[in-house]
Image (cartoon, rainbow, N blue to C red):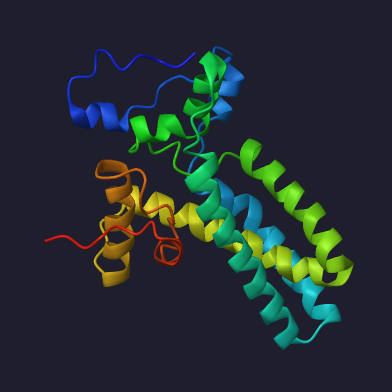
Length: 211
């Protein structure tokens, strides 16, 4: 059961709070993850997929398939955030499910342990991606496409953490942070692309420039 917001002494405390999500202490602990965990788990898999790919294909083919996998991820990131994460499921259990999936992040966007996906969530996504890429691209192209997909996911998780907890000094970093924080604090129906904000311009959900 989620903790109540009552008792926080300031807006800063509320935004950075890390409420309990599950009565079970093991599940609740697994719902929190350090930002380095996706890198520890998936970078070795990316390297392995790259090795397998380059053994059987030319570097140019691997590069093209990897870019394709990356683009596929960015589209899933955009549409997943826009429709699945922000879908208001009906009923009490639907409301609870929405809170677990994404609502907790909008209530406590500065919680440092809930800014990247726990492996319990990203693992099934990668398993599904493995199955679909095998069906669509076959056993040969599967490896570089999946490699690009996982790279896209890692970029997303790192950018998401960065936008909430870094102090960017580059124009790109400032832009990514500004767009994502506008999604949180100005209009949650805009700026769905966290690491790929260009899809918001393509699909008409970009924030309009304001003075």
